[in-house]
Length: 329
Image (tube, rainbow, N blue to C red):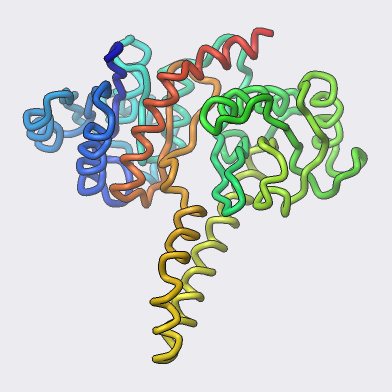
């Protein structure tokens, strides 16, 4: 076995909190023998768990950042919160990555202000694997930068390409600009200028990609500003939830439809898993030192497990160093 991979985990993040985080961490430890976890949170949560698990260390934190707090202000004020401490462990070299299902804004602020940006990165960006029954693709940015300059999108493309190549196993991933049409003259002034820069500076840029191209998996990486990306991914996730709820309603209408549901249950479960954000467990904050992944606030045990394991995989593949090299070039 090689060197251990040390991941700091926010024990109190998410809507479910420790009730999901602790069993999720336990499952991640069981799945990867080279994984070590530093569990950040209140003493009564992290110390008993660490005592019961050999590869877990308790990092007691006396503060917690709530979902409704102003992210940057909370990060500056609550220096002993689980999110700030987790990112500080990266800066201090005690951890190589951090995972939290807590406040996305606080994780973005702490990742940038505490863990620190990779040299040359203008704006760290939040990426996500778009769940699709065809094949997963990367979308970046999905919320870190609501207002963007065209040159930011070039860096988003380079960083997300590294992540797609490593985590999705896509050699020389194709990159598309999310836009309202395929022609290079379509879109806002930001989109048109970004198109020109991407064409000049990103070798695998293939042009504009429209909304339907995302779920069809037509390209490997889609880049856009954080406002558009956030609306896009939440629309996809919301549509998925509404659709599966409607399917359950259809199958519950009569005895015959219930029998039919029993016949196709396996296929429906497989389809639901293919579009579930729990599969990867979190969205990486690209452009910061180390590996920083942010999980859904509604993360369950499976999502926590997969988020911690994805963070560890990001570390083991050296994604941060590869991004630094890509930006430097």
